[in-house]
Length: 111
Image (cartoon, rainbow, N blue to C red; front, top):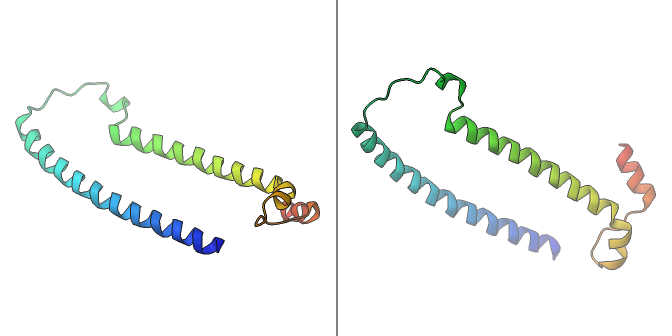
């Protein structure tokens, strides 16, 4: 039952992401067309001598998302380790929680 529930949640998430991707693709296409049109109307500005030292908006965004991914991965690892440490209690409180002994948890950690 738990695995069918998790599969249902995973499938629903995949469908939501697919719909979101389609909407994003439509927006990117429309913005690209408008940007091409507007760019032809804007004159070229003189180059700023400091512009080589300033990251582009794409570089800044890429770096920010890379950092966010690192924090999210660290939060996931921390959460899973914390839940693993709580298994002696959750195994007694939640009927479907995995029961692990301290001995098996220690052997898993050593491996």
